[in-house]
Length: 213
Image 1: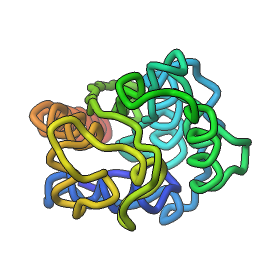
Image 2: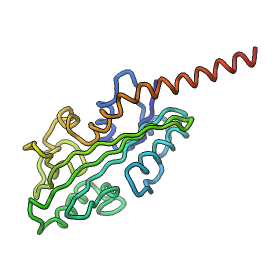
Image 3: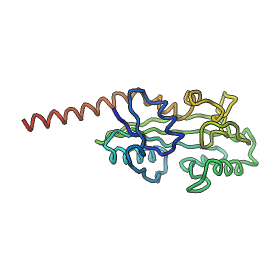
Image 4: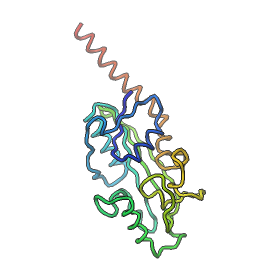
């Protein structure tokens, strides 16, 4: 079954393609020519559902979307849902990282605890849906390290690991990341969800045939 991934973030697309089962053909929003709505929700779940519902409606396919971000305890949970826009609506990753470091300049390492949180939503064109989440706990470093990943990865060192997310390979990161955990959690529910939706489609075709006959 073809599933549309409601994201224009190429780093996120690469990660999520590695996490979904191989038998699911993933196409992106750009592939099918649909635009994504503005993330106006107050929570990660609201934003994930907002994107997945729009993509499912516009494409006619089952849609998967996630919203994720960084929650820093010393900043009362910021940047949170505004992680990608922390330094401004069109902020780059380096600009967001620079602002984060500036705001934590006088905060000791012991108080630089943080977590990445991800919520994944799956929505079918008939409105049926499911969602799950994942969390990765860690600390924010004072100097970025690593060249992989995207966003705040060079500053985030997960608990129990001596490397930042940006120093891990994609496979290594997916094993412990918030997004990896969210998708692994939802994976067991995704197959029956898709099978149930396909059954609804097949039943609709059968009814149409019987009616026309």
